[in-house]
Length: 182
Image: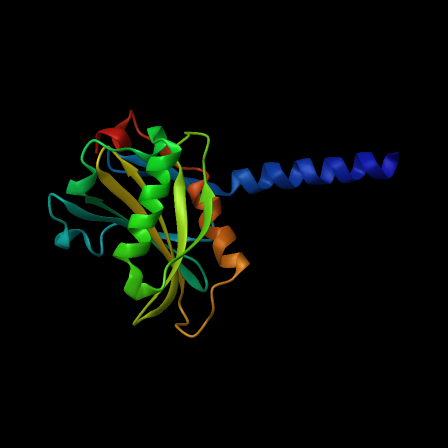
């Protein structure tokens, strides 16, 4: 019994310390995410290239991987949101991604639904720079997406990289419905 209590206490302390090392970032008026202290945040490098319809928001850098976050207006999804979509609409969305990115060999890997209820669909893809995970949600016709890849272009996609991306996505929360109003 003492061992069980010790293990539970150690786990509780670990979870408490893990939460204490998280930082929160607010991406404009759109959303917040939490990320580990071990990652660095860059939210200035590519903003000069932003347009009204396409914006790079930030990059998180770990020791061996990066996560880029951006948004784009998608005219064909005007007024559409994955968080309120029917099952048939969600299937049509996945089919559309598979067609749109056909030249990047897409495969649906997972779906993450954070506490906010806004689902992210995660796909594996490959382009001239190597393999990466692409996570996207659509909110009122705006694509909010994350690209996650290793710094080593020859490194294969794996569970630790996927878990890192999912950890960030699980903390996604709109700012005063900013994501939905994007």
